[in-house]
Each structure stands twice: as C-alpha cells, then as structure tokens.
Length: 436
Ligand SMILES: [Zn+2]
Image 1 (cartoon, rainbow, N blue to C red):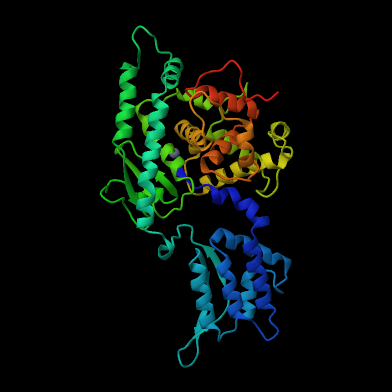
Image 2 (image 1 turned 90 degrees about the vertical axis):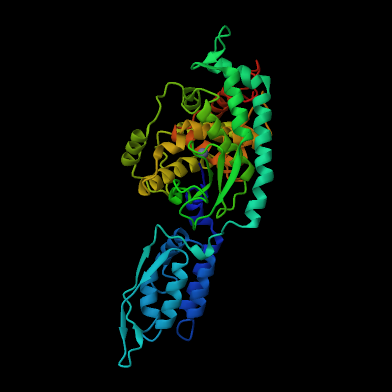
C-alpha cells in the first residue's frame, strides 16, 4: 500500500509557513475588531482558507497572541455572538463541520420557541471525519488516467526483469548454485516466468472513499485504504486497486510501487535482510517498534522543537555537511519521523510500515523510475538533495527518507551505495555514490 504522507510531514512547516492559515487568522481579527460590532460574515468567510481540522488546530493556537481581543477561539465566539445570533452560529457550525471540526454550544429558546445561542462553545475534532460531499468519486478523469500508466508500469517492470543484469544479481543475492539453478526449491527461470505472468495479468479496479468495498470484491473492506493512493492484496494478485478520491501526482511511481509488492509475494528480488541492512548504520542493531517507543518516551521534546542533544545530532550534522545543506534540513526528517510515529500510535496504525522491507523495495524501485535509472546505474546523493530540503516532493522518496531517519541517519553515501548494491544492478568497481 502506498500512503499519503504530506499531512504529517508538513504539519510542522505548516505551523510557521502556511500562508492560508495566517490569512484566515487576519480575516478573523478583522471580523472581531469590526468597528460596528462583529462582522460575522467576515469570520465565516475566513474559514474558506482552512481545509482540514489540523489546519484549524493551528489556526486556533494563533489566538494566543490576543490580536482578536480574546485569548481563545471559543472565548471570541462566546463574546462576539449574542443570543440572537443563533443562525450565524449554525452557519459557522456547518462550515466547521465540513472540515472535520465539531462546534458544540448551549441552546435555549425564547418565549415564542425560537432557538437562542447561550454560549459555552466547545470544540472537538471528528477524527473519523469524511466529508462525503467533497469526496471525488470514481469518474472518467480517474478511469482514463490510469490505463496508459498501468501499461507504462508493466513495460517498466518487463524491461527491468528482462535485463540480464537483474537475473544475474538475483542469483547472486539468493546465492543460487549454478548446478541446480534453484532457490527455495523453485527454478530461477520459473520464478521469472511467474513474474512476467503476474505483470501480464494485471488489471485496474477503481474505488473511492464513499465505498465500503471495491466493486466486485466484497471480502475486501476499504476502511483502511481510504488514505491510500492504491493497494494490492495477495488474495487477488491480478488486481491493482486505485483510489479515485485521491489526487496522485506520482501515479506512475505508485503503480510501479504496487507491482513490486506482487512480485515480492512471488519471490523477493532481494532477500529482506539485504534490504533492512541498507538503513542500518555499521555497528547498529536493527531498531524495532519497541525501541522506537522507548526513544519517544525518554524524549519529551515537543514536535516543534528539535532537541540538539538527540542521539542523531552527530549524524544529522555529518549528512548536512556531505550534502551541503544546513543541518536543520536534515533534522526536519528526524521530526517528521517522530510526528509519523505519534500519528501511527494515536491511530493504532502499524509502526512496522515505516521500514517494512517490501515497502522499502517498492520505494526504491519507484525512485529509480523517478530518476530514470536503468539496471546498473546508481542513485546519488545529489538526486535526493532537493527532496531532503523539501524543494521537491515525492511520496516514495519521503518514505525512504523516513526509514533512513528512523534508523539514525546513516552516512548518506554509504546508505545509497548499499541501496545501489542490493538492487539487481551491476556492481561497478567505481561507485559514483561516493563523491571525492
Ligand atoms: Zn506499499
């Protein structure tokens, strides 16, 4: 499964940099300070700039500066709206609900039975919120976008697997003995034939976030796949499920990523241990989810403050130097991984996802396609640099970097050289991932 990362990753930057939140806040200040009472329509319209509850949460924290005349959003509403503003409160309530924010208040009524606003505003967030009205459904735009991309992804894999270098590397990684040419009792040629059969039989199944099941597949419940761009399952290996409610800028990479999972089910191109070793610094043991939890517990720094005493600070600075980037650009990923782990714990999501071998193998293959890398060519630090400093964004690169960060920022040259080695490529005597 390939999951959207943008939200957790950018939460932090958002706080300082999202111009829309600042705009919304300025409008609210204007509305609250309106010379003739309160401009409720201005306040209502300010929320046009706010897209979700997490942005609202950031906006809410801005009230601390008291520019509205109040120290909290709730206080402002309680004071600026009087009992006859019931209709305005309902409008505001509806608007906020459309972004997953629940505004509760005390109601009363006048002698004629008309409802009144009695204040006592409370704000909560609907974590399972789905604004069905705004969900993009399976439509022609989506169903016509993917078929040519699936063809490209299939061709990409056929080419990659047809390269003699790939098979040669596969044999080397699995330590295949020439005399029997088998791995796990299977002939190497048969495994490759299975790969090709799998690729040839693929078809697309479209779903959207209003559905409980993908069309025709009642046994698959979609509640977990709502934030996925696409996913595959081992029970229906001919299907690539595509989420039409998401707008995927990297759709081709996503399909390449998903196909990798299916090939991995047949037989991983590399033994998993080779993949996980890529992320681990020399002399380190593999970090499991439990260790990660321990790290979080002992480290009570807030998300918005980077602890320079972090165990990783040495490596962060080292990688900053290698890449020619300020160390804060690297430590961004340290924070991102902490935010991601917290988010996963809160939502009861699987922590293992961050570094799962099949996910990393998918990430790597997608990234190769992104950079136009052919069997035998290498990913270099220069290629990743604009993604590390957030100049560019790509989901697979982000997930690769998150696992790199969660394992303590191994020297990026070593990290990439290990990736390049495991990846069914020619091992060249000169390794261009180590700049002189
Ligand atoms: Zn995946």
